[in-house]
Structure formats: C-alpha cells, structure tokens
Image (cartoon, rainbow, N blue to C red; front, side, top):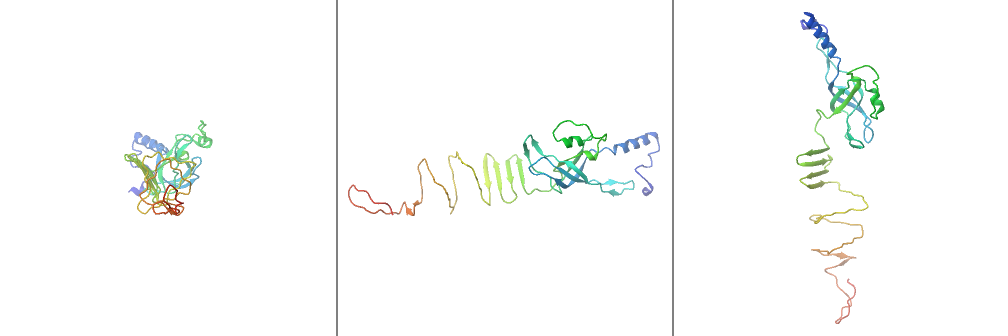
Amino acid sequence: MSESIKGQQDFTTGSSEFNAAAFQIEQAMRKINTAEPVRVVSVQPGAVGPVGMVSVQPLVNLVTGMGDGMTQSELFSLPYMRVQGGENAVIVDPKPGDMGLAVYAMRDTEGVKSNRDGSPANPGSARMYSKGDGFYVGGFLNGTPKRYLMIDDEGLTLDDGAGGRLELKGGKLTIVAPAGIESTSPTEVHNTPALVMGGDGATATMNANMQINGSVTSTGDQVAGGISQTGHTHTGVQPGSGSTGTPQ
C-alpha cells in the first residue's frame, strides 16, 4: 500500500482544509536550511595565511516520497572557523575526512565573503536560508587525535605524536624530547637556585669559554690541558722558599 503513495503527501493531507494548509506549510519549511553534519572533502588553502575555505559533503541523505535515500550534492567554498582574535590565532585547519557542522546564514552572504574586511554589504540576491551561504564549524564526531594540546584540571599537555611531550602541571614543567632540545638565542638566563644536569654516565659538553662567578666544587678529578688536578706532579721541587715548576 505504501508503494502507491506519491510525493510527500499522506492519506490525510487532503482530508480537511487544516491538513492541506499544514502540508503546504511543512513543504515551505523544508526549503529552510539551518544546519547539518558534513564531512570535509577538500581544503583551500590554509596554514599561515587568511582563513580558507572547505568543500563538504552533507551526511544526511534526502528521502524521496517512496522512502528511498538520495545522497546530497557536495557544497563548495564554505569558510571554516579558526580561533582568532586580531592578529593572534590558534591554527588547526581542517583536513579532508574531518566531520563537522555546516550552518547556513539567513541571507545572501556573497558580498561579505568577498569583502573579508568586516564591513557591511548588501545581499547579492533575495535568497534566504540557502545552502549557498554556508559556514563550516569543525570538530564533531572525529576520532582520537595523534598530536594535541590539552588543557584540563591538572594543567597543560602538548604532545607532538612522535614521543615529544611538554607538561605544565602543578607548577612543574616537564619536557620529554627523544630527538633532543635545540635552542638558538643571543643570551640565555636561568634564575635557578639549584640546577641539576645529567645522570649516571652522562657527559656535558660546552663549546665556549666559561666564566664562573663563584666557587667550584667537584667530587671527581678536573683535567685542564691534559693535566690532572688531583694527580699531577711539579718539577723543580727544592727545600726553602723557592717555587715549584709548572704542573705536569
């Protein structure tokens, strides 16, 4: 019996003036686009630059009067959201395969999209709630990230997905860098009362002149120019007030 029903009318649509009017209103409302889940197909452009655009595939199929599903058409050039204030931004641009939400403006937004300067612009047409005026908001229904910045009640964690990790928790900064730490700067100042470096069998190498304004305490030997401080000898040793020769 259901296969004989054509369109989106049902058996009661024409049974009264109220039902007929309700059907017409419902059909008009179906032309209003508000928001729907989508999947990113492509991104243009991104990185360090102005916020780009995405092409997306709506994920909720249309349904015919016969109850058959029908895939929607791809939507092109939707501006995506970036967390930004003035010239300050957190750049995590969308990637193909991401899922998010497409939201549709109430008026034609082509003028605003073209200007990109925040100034008001007249609508380019009389269309309303059209999918041609969509914006992409990402981050819904996606999988587990490999690289992330996490801020929770314990503190801050930055993970590069390759073993590198920075944690700031409870006032303590912990850095794990399997490939090493490289710093380039004209000066480096550490206002640290206690600085501990190395571990069992560790070696510290400094390719620079060193000046220490304070005492030096060593539990092991110190070698300067190949001469041991604790095991060297002196030449020219003789009784009296004379001086010894240089260490050797």
